[in-house]
Image (cartoon, rainbow, N blue to C red; front, top):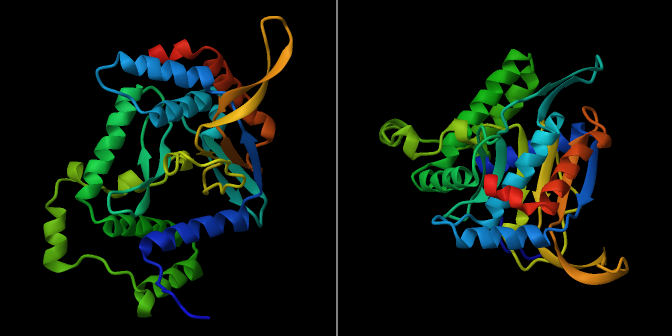
Length: 302
């Protein structure tokens, strides 16, 4: 076969490959495609935006919708510790909702950033934080920030006695064509002069309590939904939003008769770690979202 191109994994691809492989190797997944009707919700958000001095994107409203669902089902906002050999497990639920979000940066690179303490923040605050994250990304060497997190994970592995794992990582990242290049000497000192509030740091990409992806924001004209999704350990749940789509829906009209009409649907793929949770524990999440969608005026308080 004729080769078009090839490349060796950089640190970004290494981290993604390692985490997703660990996910599929170790986690028994439950995945569910949830497709709520967002017709009135979208219309109300657009109407509300018309009266706002600062416009809020529909994606931000959807993120807030997920946050409200998590508040109704806090067990989904947890991390798991599990020892396979001893069959010992522990689930820790967090009060703070820290959402990890894969985003496309101005240079077309993808990275996962984490927004912290979102449980009580307004949509304006959330949108402002996301905009500030993109601003800081323009001043950042992302490989440097990712390397800091990678080193943190390596130290944690050493503390757990995972010597072979650490050695393999060092060989894979420090030798041959696969060597990870980081800043050194004067170049590193100059980079570190950039104030932390003006660049991405390890705190911005350290794993959150849950992950929320929005593939609908990448291609709004898409038709379909994500059908399989990996839970990133130690998280116990993850969510992926597709684009809002027109779908035929069965509704009951004013005469009490059922009819088929076109409605707007938001496909959401949600996956949970079956070691930590059962499907029933995700039901309050969906019920709360359904409640908001049926009463979109709640958005006024966001």
